[in-house]
Length: 58
Image (cartoon, rainbow, N blue to C red; front, top):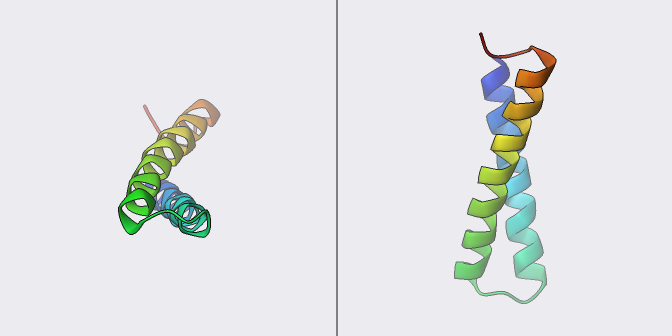
């Protein structure tokens, strides 16, 4: 359940990163790369925060 929430939050960050790249005048390829980087960073951050809070993990 919490992993799904983390994935959804990361997807929102990826969409926001793509929109920022497009608004800045970037090409679709740059927007896709920005979205991928934002997704990876947000997913790592959200899972790290959830693990430190004890929500997910062993």
